[in-house]
Image (cartoon, rainbow, N blue to C red; front, side, top):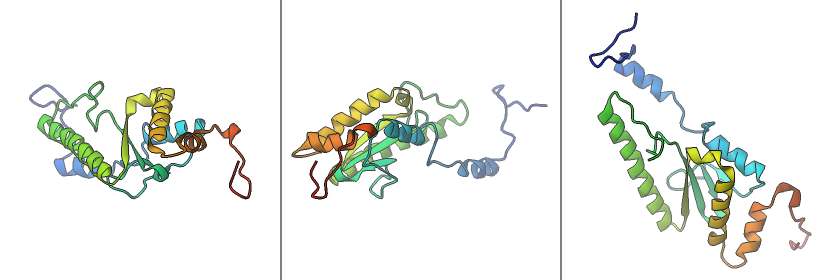
Length: 173
């Protein structure tokens, strides 16, 4: 028999502390719908030079350290995507504060990274279904981040695996 609350919705069968303990077990890293999907996109397009969980402010999902580019993959729910975020109907004030807090923290992290000379690129979870759009945006950002000789350096980061340029011992093409 299901227990209904006063609003006609199914009541939680766990206590508040049990629910909290269960939610604490939900891991925030390596979410297949977000970070691992972007890893796949990078690999499919032969993009190299990135690292996961690089130790800088804000703990970005990916970093291109040589060009100081931090990439965050934002889940539509957790970061309040204007197109896809659907707020839960229970504990509304908690979830509103939680998501607004995440968005505020996102802005602070971007500002802190900018002060440290980094560019932050934020990618919505829903945009992972359009990999070419992500690649175009990433390529444009990388080209802007690479000082003199930007085109050559960007090519090295974005060359498809089959077209890599072999380096001679002296370091030239």
